[in-house]
Image 1 (tube, one colour):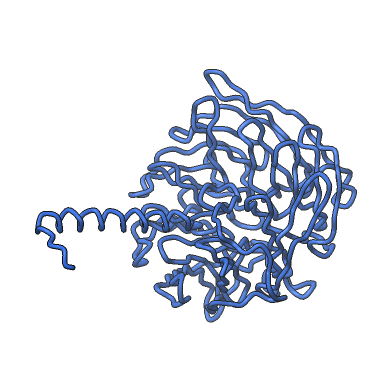
Image 2: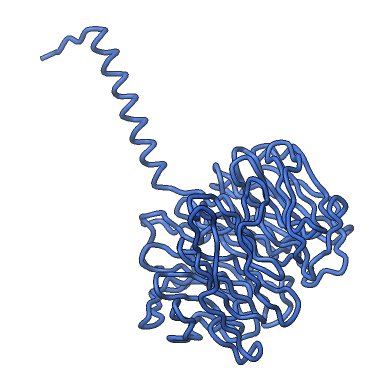
Amino acid sequence: MSILVSPQARRVWSFHFVVACSVVLAFGAALADDWPQWRGPKRDGVWRETEIVERFNSPELQIKWRAPLGSGYSGPTVANGRVYVMDRVTEPVQLERVHCFDESTGEKIWSREYDALYRNVGYPAGPRASVTIDSGKAYSLGTMGRLFCFDAARGSVLWKKDLVTAYDVDMPGWGIACSPLVERDLLIVVAAGENACLVAFDKNTGEERWKALDDPAQYSSPIVIDQAGKRVLVCWTGDNVVGLNPRTGEVYWKQAMKRVQMPIGAATPVTDGKRLFVSSFYDGSLMLRLTGGDRPAAEQIWRARGLNERQTKALHCMISTPVLDGDYLYGVDSYGQLRCLDANTGERIWESQQAVPKERWSNIHLVRHGEKYVMFNERGELIFARLSPQGYEEISRAKLIEPTSVQLPERGGVCWSHPAYANKHVFARNDEELVCASLAVE
């Protein structure tokens, strides 16, 4: 039996079919997530994708693709089908490079290089900051203060700045390390300049909008939070934890964190909306309460610092950013000790050395994923684990990438760069290559 359908009915059916397909495609796309900046889409170290494997089926992850790379600490970022990362070469001349790879194949799409002579910089393996992707633009910041805005698809330079010459930079001992931050129409960077610890530029033109703070800079990337009905830019400098108006650079609040040695804070501030926590290798931990009626404010809840780098109290983080989870804090202490603290007091609940061998600055990057944690340690291993007040419970572990020795020429090398988790894959680098592995449920 045949059914006759009028041309008008066919047009209506075709329209609804296209709409339905669009909805299905949009829903499918919503299940995936890019990793367009330092610590993920919201700069909070949370991986929100679903349909990820619960445990690994072999001792080593199967690598989907590899791409050759030079040395550097810059962690990869992923956006719009592309992977971005920075590195450094020293022969025949010293260059920093910004690379863009195809997310599916690892094929290089574009690469840009520029002269970058490192002067008086410790740990000179290469760039530190992750490339930030926003609205079709890629923002990179090199160790010696070279800031670029690229067309993210083509790699053409849209604008650039030399922070050292523009702002009389007092170069930190390990160079400029903080990843650029986009807030609406602004690009905010830690410039380490005279009366310009922070500088905001028009993200499209590079025009300076404001500069703020005469504090010495350190290595902690800034974040923006919502507080007292306002957007607040939080920056941990060498002397203070500061909350500012991101539109103007006006200081809302400032809390001192007295140092015992050089500025060394590298971990990103973490918050649950009511409290904000920072921790560093020499100077221990500081927990703030975020308050405010008409105006944002902050006050100290507790402060803890041990006698030295071995006799620590609470948490002395080096590279790893800790996690604030309700009434508990989880983080990596000065020699790789994974610790759980009472977030209200700073008292230690437990400590474990299972996730990484004990060494000075031994590192694990922590990312929350649902009810578990994804942990990438400096041995190049990916770990799924549960962290609770009851202790460390390892679910599964697999090798992802080999440690290399340019970042650290000791203990057989390290993997200190933060990986990216995007579109059900993990992207990680060492001093020789960038790798991609699927973590999707088959």
